[in-house]
Each structure stands twice: as structure tokens, then as C-alpha cells.
Length: 150
Image (cartoon, rainbow, N blue to C red):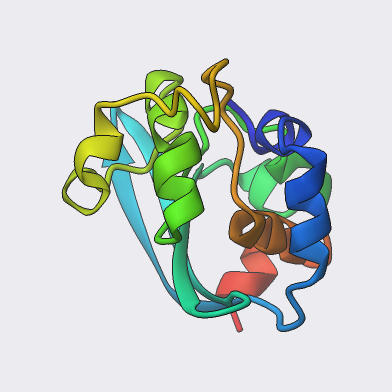
């Protein structure tokens, strides 16, 4: 699944909440890893929420054209995401896992890793929380290459 699709599935109320987040995400660290023979960049951000700070992770396949382009990074398939916020855990983690878009944090997700959100996400629709929307907003302003080279 790509970031563009995950963002298009975000409920309107979550988009309204994202706009209330004032501070920009801060890149905490980035690493590279290989999964299923695909090389990835893993970008870890700190995002200040309304009440707490959360850790978000975005794992994107390493493709030179995409990391040098703002637009193409949103079209990469096999993107994986994670956020430490409760909404991510209880509303979308399972849906993302079933589509192969969850960056594995099995121990942090507990029962949410194996249980669908029947009330909050009855259609099991994969999308991202407002903190990851904020990260995506940052990626519309600068390329991944520029971000990791700062």
C-alpha cells in the first residue's frame, strides 16, 4: 500500500484534528534495513500531540527517484507506518497489519496486533493517525534525501 492511499482513507474528523497540531515533526533518527529482499529507509520522528509526544515511524522502500522527489515518495508501494499514540493502536494497527503496511511493533501493540477495531473501524480500512498525517505534511515540503541529510 502507498502513502497516498493511506492518507486518502483518513476520516475527515482526523484531518481536522491534524490541523490543530502546531509543531512540526522532528526527525529523531533514520536507519536502513532490508525486509523481504526490499531495502528500506526507516525514519523515526517525534510528533507533539495535543496532550503528549508520540513516536512515529515511516519505512519507505529505497528508490533513488522517489527519495529525491516530493511527489513520488507518496506513490511508493510497500510503505510501512507506526505511531505510538492510542488511536493508531486501537483504530488502525490491525487494518494496516492485514494490508502489510504496519511497521512491526508487535510487543507495543499488544492485543491490537491481532484484534480488529470492530467499533472504531468496522470496515477494517487502513489509514494513518493525525501524527503520521503531520509527518506526511512535512514530506510535501522537502524530499526524504534533504530531510535525512540535515
